Length: 354
Image (tube, rainbow, N blue to C red; front, side, top):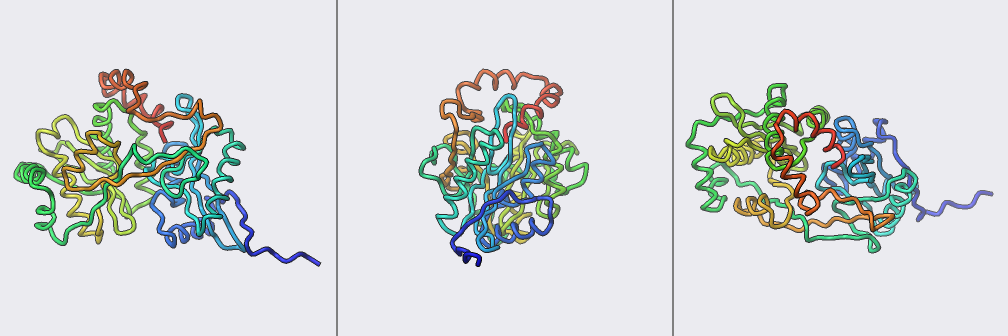
């Protein structure tokens, strides 16, 4: 006679993210648990298709029902090492679980999977934090606010000093375009690549942005600001759970004097509301950085983000923090590279920054 099944038993497995039925089950659980865009299998697959880090994860089940999910990207970089990251190229992620016991099972499972895949570290960007792991809440902040009810109210919501900058941008000769076609993608990548080079950061491969736009379709688009037909600011945004997320954006040197970034973000607020969004997620910024204070100037209040990491050898933890002093000389050198050279070699480096 078979022993009765223990209803409290939780099993873990790596799901098949190429199986539509499996993906639908996980997507349903993410929605039920109020997960982020970064928890979805679609995000993981787009990261793999566009930049290389393998889409994987751990699924926790109890008597055939999903009770936990940890999305993971398997990163392998000659420069930045190997890691399991939740989730690749994301500012959020981490464990979704119906209770603390399931979460603990997923934490242990992540360590075991890291050992099996020769990844010396696991990184969680959000979610519950294992007590035995290294964690911090003082390095990054998120910025989210409700959208106003109409265009006039949205402008008046912005603090006076920043509102004056937005008004100047509205009085100029800038034009705005929103789309997903090749012209939009090419304009966005040209502007974004120049923007990150100017900041001393390697640019992501364009294939990553194409994969995101192709995978998320009506949940993603590009808003570009031009002057006389020349793109000066552009942002690729996502729409999820009634929230717009301007995710990859930037401007050329000319954007600052033109207030093109001010125009870009204000127009995105209006565009998002017309699409039915009710919140504006201004993304993550390093505490006390320039972008951190820029977002505060817009009226957004910073909220601490909690991240955690497990390292098989804490003395050799992966470091991809661009503000770390060890990178300062490299950043200054990168700023001086010709744009064509930075665009050729940058994607090979940036793939490891997932």
